[in-house]
Length: 99
Image (cartoon, rainbow, N blue to C red; front, side, top):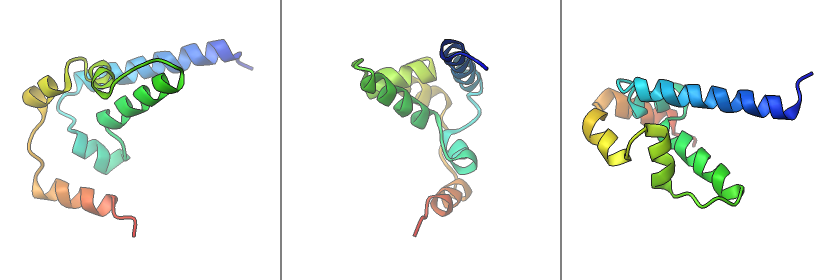
């Protein structure tokens, strides 16, 4: 059985590795991540911000995004974000239609 401190440290290490991986994979567009996995870098940064705020730490959306993106969000968008094509937009619409 694993103690809580060890579990927290391992979860933190896995999170850091996920963030590093996403920072390296600038070719993986957020819309594709949303379509395939139901989350993207923005979701991850929002979850991070919410956890910080729940723990009593002031963190803005912009600060959380910079942690996840490894740079200011606007810089990442300018460098790496591509325009979504019609197929990506249609897949997003279908995957997020919960009627």
